[in-house]
Image (cartoon, rainbow, N blue to C red; front, side):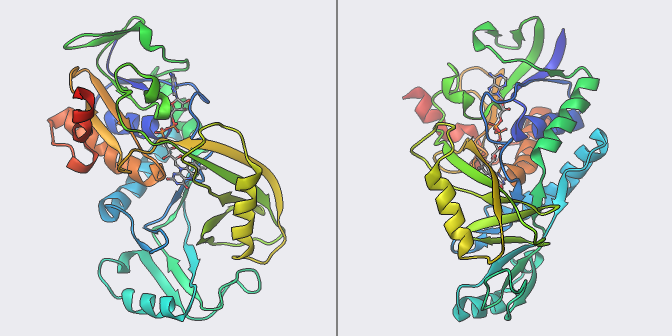
Length: 352
Ligand SMILES: Cc1cc2nc3c(=O)[nH]c(=O)nc-3n(C[C@H](O)[C@H](O)[C@H](O)COP(=O)(O)OP(=O)(O)OC[C@H]3O[C@@H](n4cnc5c(N)ncnc54)[C@H](O)[C@@H]3O)c2cc1C
C-alpha cells in the first residue's frame, strides 16, 4: 500500500495537518489512538488574540487568527459537523488605570481588529465582579475539540485514510527516499504524537517542556453568554454547562487530578464571579510545549523522510491551522519554514 505521508497521532496537530496536506493534494494516512498522550481531548479549546497578565497580542496573532475561520469551517463542511464557536471574551479591569490604558489602546491599528468594546461600567450584573468595567474581545471563541476529532476521524475513515491503532516505532523502516511501516510505504512520516516524541529514538532530543493542566466541568442555573477571563477562564458551553480552567504545572507530569488545582481554580473564580455553581468533573492533560514556547515543524537533521509537527503547547487551536499550512507548503513547494517554528533551530542539540 502506498501513500504520500503517514501521520502519527490524531490530536489537534495530526488532524489539522492531515487537512492541510489533503488540501495540498497529498494522500495521507493517519495512525492514531486516543489516550496515549492526552492534551487535545481535555483542552477547553479557547482561541484568544490578547493574552497574559500584561494583556498583549499573542505571538503572530494576525497571520494565526486569519487562518482559524477558513481552516476549521472547511473542516466542518467536509466532515458535516459543527465545532468552531466564535464567542466574545470579556476581561474585567483591575483598576481605573487599566481602564484608561485600554480606552486609549482601542484606537491603535494593531489592537483595533480584536477589540469589540471597552466598558467603563460594570456588566453581567450581579454575576460578574467588574467594578471598573472591562475589555470585550472579538475574533475569539472556542473549538469543540472532541467533536472536531471525532468528525474528522470519520471523514478520514470514509477515505480509508485512518488507522486506529498504536504506532510502534520498532516496526518503522527508514530509508533515504521512503519509509515503510507494516506494509504501507510513504515518502515520509510526520510525528504529531504530542509528548510521545519524548520516547522516540529519532526525536527524543527535541526540547519539550511538558506542562500539566487541569480543567473543571461546572454547572450553573445562570447562563452567561460571554467567556469570562481573568486569572482563569469561565467558558459557557450551553445549557448551564461551563468549563473552568486551567492550571500550569511544569513539575508533575502524571494524569492524576489534584485537590490543589481544583482549589486554585475555584479560588480564582470566586474573585471573578458571584453565582451559584456545582463542580461536576475534573480532567487532566499534558501540553506538549517546547523550551522556547514555539511549535516545531520540519525535517529531521539526518533522515529527510522523518518529519515533525509538534510543540503546540498552550495554544494548539490557534497555532495549528497556520503552522500546519506552513509545513504543507514546505512539502509541496519547498517554501521555507518560518524560522521561529523550524525544527532546525534545535539541530545543535541533536549533534551535541
Ligand atoms: C487543561 C488544558 C487546557 C488547555 N486549553 C487550551 C485552550 O483553551 N486552547 C488551546 O488552544 N489549547 C489548549 N490546551 C493545549 C492544547 O491541548 C494543545 O496545544 C494541543 O492539544 C496539542 O495537540 P497535539 O495534537 O500536538 O497533542 P495531543 O493532544 O497529545 O495529541 C496527540 C495524539 O496522538 C496520539 N498518540 C500518541 N502516541 C501515539 C502512538 N504511539 N500511536 C498512536 N497514537 C498516538 C495520542 O493518543 C493523541 O491522541 C490545553 C491543554 C490542557 C492540558
